[in-house]
Length: 169
Image 1 (cartoon, rainbow, N blue to C red):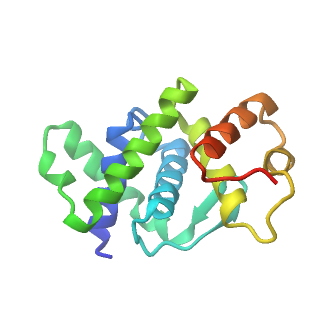
Image 2 (image 1 turned 135 degrees about the vertical axis):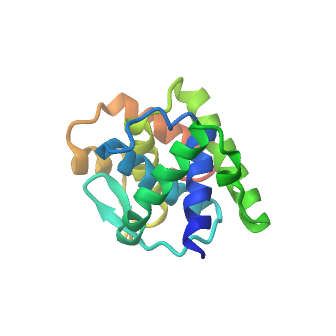
């Protein structure tokens, strides 16, 4: 995938879901970029990213090379240059699907921020990409992260189960 296309697809989702209100020099921006990239790839965008589990959930080392490009696109769009968000036809459908998914999540949770996005992507990875699959993804996430409220994680889990993405054992 052309690196400008990858950056544009991620930037488009960040803007469309309201996640662009964070300082683009911050660690939170990097977390948002990683989680949006992971969700885009899970939804079917072939971004050629290789995600593994790290402290904050899904992380692709090769995605860190795009932080500045994504930040530049977001800043350009904020200045009114919509052309920087144009993406190839093959990525329009999957980006729209990711935007719809994240906006449904936002409505369900009544918020979409770096923390809720991190929990969503982490649970998604635990129930679909970790082998062997944990017996209880909620407990596994709490064990791995430590400081997340169980009721919050359970609410995110119910969203994923209701979307038929994760299943109960």
